[in-house]
Length: 294
Image (cartoon, rainbow, N blue to C red; front, side, top):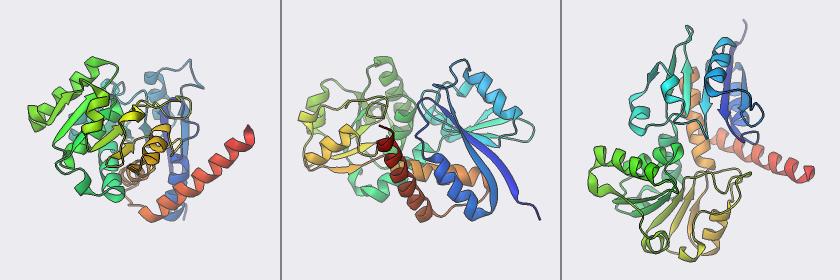
């Protein structure tokens, strides 16, 4: 009897260090599926545009793809249908492709980040809290809705693009009321007074160095969370840890959203502990390879 075969991928920029292939390889192996997870990095295919890439993977027989920066919102008008939760967020991180080529967009970043937060910091850390979130793009939308799910009382949004911050606050207000969110007025002062801080930008990722959070405002009473896992110890996470804050890196979000995406594509729920282990092994191997390449 031949194995079930499946082709999946990830479309984004600066993604060659992604650990999604390692996570899906582990899940494929345990599930008995002959599967391959292909990285489609637009930094390496600069001549290709998102509509062309989506057409190409449909023609190649992909069952679906994950979507990351900078396409989580750009992909929306290219899809045939959008899952209600993804439509509410206004961003996509997973696209399922049916046998007839029809596409459906989902967002598992929200669920993945929420479950990672519960696992790493505990739901009580968010309940009734005041949180400052830096970044209101695709990942920022998912995280903001996840924070609402977790019971945050007030979310203060800062983005260099004020229109994006305003749009996110407006979206949240529609579902949770006008008092749930506001735009940051004095980021440093508001971080100092908050319970938690989230970096939902790409700043701190390998290739996008820096720390978007003013270090002087960080305190030991804070919790600090990042969506980035390349590297796990971003400048923000290192600075927060040095101040004695409780920290949450982006690795858990990566693993939990992979669980959801694999279940969607295959109908099989992969073992969470095995995927956490696969992430750790893959991450250590990647970091060793990067050091040796220098």
